[in-house]
Length: 408
Ligand SMILES: Cc1ncc(COP(=O)(O)O)c(C=O)c1O
Image (cartoon, rainbow, N blue to C red; front, side, top):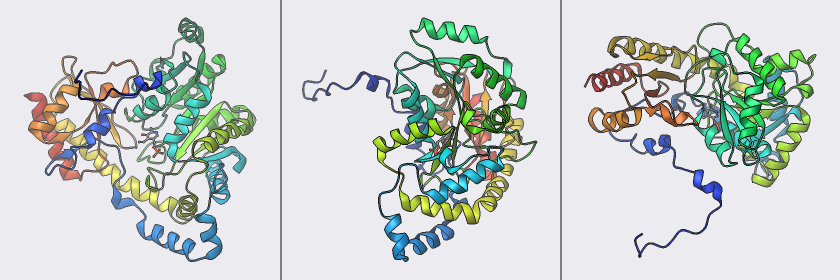
């Protein structure tokens, strides 16, 4: 050790598992001129409803009553009219519910972190897909769980085998976590039968399902599949308070991630628990941002979703076409019906992390190595491409560069 370096203080053991994410490290090089990035899965700012947001802030801040509300502390559950809007929105998705079934969070990321806190005791098992959303793994891992894997596309293991595996780790199965539509990172969507299968498994395990719907509104084509919560609520006679599904929603990919507004929709007793955690964590999500989001949702939700679909669909097509043209034999990829991601599987001898270094240094193109999305460190020969930011011409150019990299 360098004797001039101060020693670090003694952190909690959970800090050992907190590592800088490869995605965040990668984002640091993305401003370099000439680089084409398929890295971060962030919305294109051309979609942001800036004029409407400006008008909403102005209207709130120039009205003394609204100003006093917007700039004040607020209840931890969230701004009541926004919870009413969301309850109505959930009804349209097949989940009849009341504002008491909704709690507002600072993005759905905060919901995942709260749910990890609510359910996991060290040594418990969280069941996730492989690959799955890296941010969820980061949120859950602070609570030191073991991970087990569901494979909804290929049939899951027996409930008994999950119970036994969890017991061997000294805990029990606490929840299943899935991104059912146009998943991050795979781009894949679960069929209705696969969703039913997950509900059956969760029933046998007597465990909740966390349903992360970050991309669900961005469907370009194909039949909408009901959300898992809607299927479960229908199984329980339309009563959300008997559902085992905890729905995590967000406005980040439809309206804007900048206001940091997401929500949890669940049975009332679960919502009350999440509210207690919210209170202890940050008291409330920015009230003025909730008020602005309420106005944006009321006035622009449908048109914004249509605009987003119209922008991203041709980019998805451009990427798929370019992959057909430039990928060498042995490379396969998903063709998502929506969302922001295509997932590539390269021949087994390729390593996504090593490729990224060369991609950035020699070819000025960036992506996310797939291994970051596996709890157990598999997936070395996979990579995630996002088509949300580059133009169609840049996508064609960037995929051609990737093709040259793989051929070299
Ligand atoms: C699958 C998934 N869930 C949740 C989030 C978190 O989004 P937010 O906190 O902005 O709602 C993301 C962000 O990229 C995501 O990809």
